[in-house]
Image (cartoon, rainbow, N blue to C red):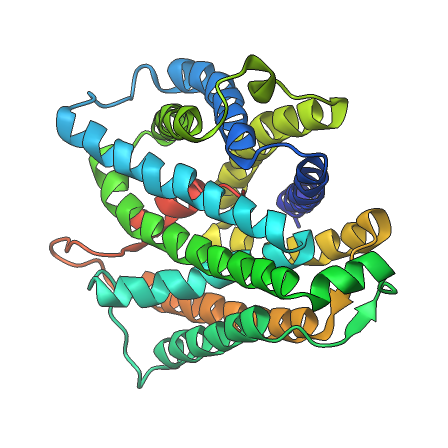
Length: 353
């Protein structure tokens, strides 16, 4: 048995968990959300652009105006908006809580794919029933996460922390963070729908992603210039932790993490790769409690468990459906839609924020 993909995905899980905690620590030191996103996107674009140039210089399609427009909205939806919403939610909640919403993305994607008629479902089949049930269970878990806090399970509440949580302002911040994270999941799912089109029009994995990071950098830089103080000090990391977090996010998460997951998808498929995502929350929770001394609440545990159950139901349905389709004779002509090639392409460009 080839253990390399498993070891690779475990390394990716640890890397993303560490990133979530580092980012929370950088925010606690006062780093601006928009500034962090802009710097991270710049580092990611500088890291991936030469790789894309040399790897795909002979196979890269011509960049037409139509493709550029698609890439622009892909950057807006898939990098700028989702990162802003995720990090807003992270700032107002905890790293463990924010990580839980990553697991809701497959459910949102499936439901939106149904709405946009890029995926069909046969409720009578086991695969269709599993995907539909898993989506309902996952959304129920997300609702529990957003609305139910519950008693503290781990981490004795300090006086300041308890006072902050008891005030209207503390509750309001948690509510704003929850809504932002729900918006993050929905936006990322919409990006997958858009990516299904881009994957067929511009099948250059590395170049398309490099373009996405570069365009997102300009988008968020414009937002930052309009909202943040135009002082050079604001745009320069003030501490070593902030600088390390920016480089780690750009090179590690968006760069090496993307390449590692792409390799795993090619070796073992998208379902195998996605199945490791819930482990990010578990590792994050351990680091969160041990390093940041954050509290772990009953609502987060129950909601996360329900979301993970829904996630694996959806993944099982997709895997079983793909297995059945692989045994069928090939169709005489292709039909547009959410086919396996599109799903593979979208899954390869998964980037965890």
